[in-house]
Amino acid sequence: MEQITDLAASLRHLKLSRLADHLDSWLQDAAKGEWGYHEFLQRLVEEEVAAKKDKRTEMGTRMARLPFIKTLDSFDYTYQPSLDPKRIKELSACRWVENGENVIFLGPPGVGKTHLSVGLGVEAIRRGYRTLFITAQGLITALARAHAENRLDDKLKFYCQPKLLIVDEIGYIPIDRLGANLFFQLISRRYEKGAMIMTSNQPFSNWGEVFGDQVIASAILDRVLHHAISVSIKGESYRLKEKLKAGLLAKHIEQS
Image (cartoon, rainbow, N blue to C red; front, side, top):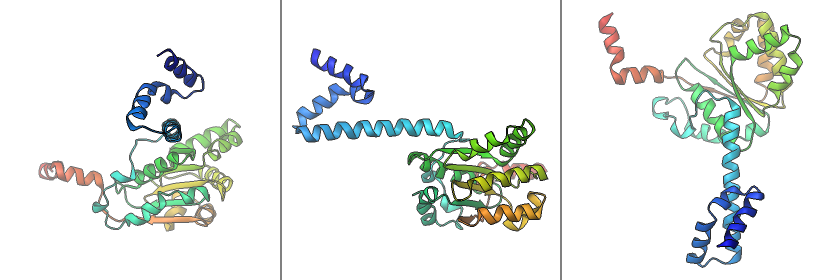
């Protein structure tokens, strides 16, 4: 018993906490299963590797500042028939992240653009890619503040650090000329280096209005779309669907 206690202490010293915590059960399983030395060591190492991967994923998820945690498995494709599940499955392999490419989800509000973005973000985090989520308005506000405080270069470097940057809700709120210029600078710095996911309720033809300048919008799209996968979603809002299920929409119509 003393030897097991000493071994557990040594494992903790080596920061192999999962093995130390479950050492007794592992030894019992090894005895019952009559594992050989190689099998026993292999299972221990696999367990610790899995534990460390889970820990990195948990930390990466916190650092990503995701608005919620939703996986691709929980997405309801039956309600969005315009989406090809096989295409999303291919994206979940995250090869585009490694290649510094972009994914753009286009569609009206409530069709699942943010859900898919978060789901792909979770997959990227699981594969060890540093990820950060921010709304377009939050991004522009942060860059404008840094510009006013002469800290723009540092802030641009900050947003270039993640291998995957998710920018949600482009087009929901108009962007002024300064904001458009700042956004262009970020796009230029990440071009062919860092991957991005963008969501927008506006088609690309309307981005000139979104950014308040057709020239800047064209320059942004030129870089964004050079290495990009564009996914258009056509369908009803999930939030509308839930209201219809609950009968809330009908009640609202009757009252009005």
